[in-house]
Image (tube, rainbow, N blue to C red; front, side, top):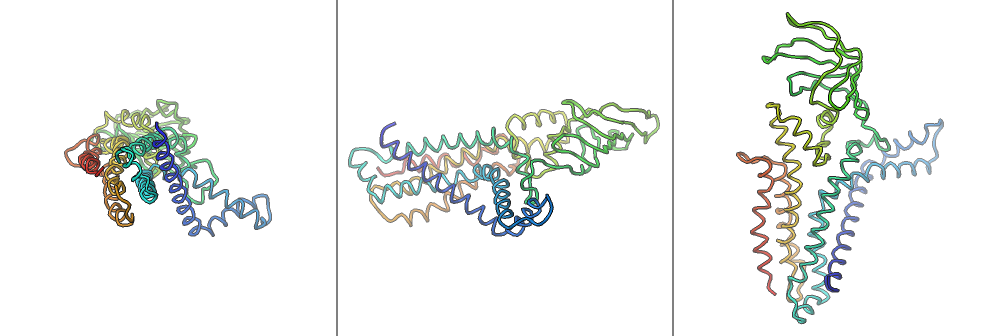
Length: 373
């Protein structure tokens, strides 16, 4: 990498980092301004657990800690959503600075094309996209429980104990429980309604406690009550089902599925291939995991499409090109997001998520080749 490449790459990285910091600070500041009283109330309760009223300074320090604890995992997730837009903005600032300081003119005078200025930006953007995928696959799954917390749960490290609503499995059974400990993976007060192919209940299995051993729910105090003729009554030691603790978390917590890694998604899909009633959910999982690649592709292609707005041979005011670039960038990036979330009839999810990148590809080639250099 030449001195020129390093200089452009460094400026692009600095602009990207600055824009991310400004964006993160803005998001957190808006949340704190809207929820300041709630943060102070929670902090006062946490600070005064030993009895008495906590001093204001201690309450304020605890509230700052709660904000940091709640938002650092959210900011890592926000990075994945906003990186494409931030890279386009950083590219615009980088080339606008080079146009203003006549650096592009100097490059042309030295016999270098404007494509040489675009190369380090594309290389760094590809590396940042790899960091985005690594963050999604390696970091986000480990902090997934922290992403489900509300403001009242700031500072806590558990999903908590919640009631399990009636949930059907691949065998047509309906499971519900008085308490589902999402952290320990246990069910208390479990009830399982087993049905025949027509949907008629055959028996109800009761258990005081159910623990997942990796293959099945092991029951403590399990017993069955027949609801149809010819069904035996007696103790039940275990229930074999594909509704493991991860599957229950996915169904119970909104957005939890988006925090799973590729391998976790693959396990969920594999466990539901024999269940014909789960085709819609399988398609959703496929769309989520393949859609991550589609979004990254759309981000890079959107960056290429927006480059000609800022790569100029002559120094000009950059306000007008920036205003023209903004709607183009938004449409390109939103196309990638919508393609990763919206189903397209007659197309499998593994293909439909790449429709926006396929549409953007010829536009990106035309944009890059249209640069006057």
